[in-house]
Image (tube, rainbow, N blue to C red):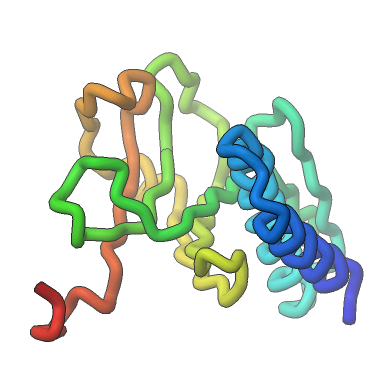
Length: 167
């Protein structure tokens, strides 16, 4: 088990412990932050297993999350659980990743964006890889509750397709 796998395991254990205690909703902010962190760890783990050696986690206020020195690529990692956000009928669930804020400078933020889709348990990641051009090619959005978001990618839950058992 590499260092990323160990960290992922500890975060999942911590999440389960926090949920078992039954703390108030304010704790959800902590779990939201952990969701982003675990997404980055999953990507680092996958990159290391694919043979990349020069991996640097940028973090903080950096314009991107991971730098791959082997290829001189800047990676932005976005992590999502299935959600609705009140944008669609309640049965419609999607994974959603913000691409761009309204006041954001676009020119050199990242080379590749990786959308990490997670189960509610923070396990079983699925990775969606977008080039910079692909990510920024999505249409600008106007969503009242998300006034600061200019571009966002939504991928809808696969289980809704060809499933006549849902009402």
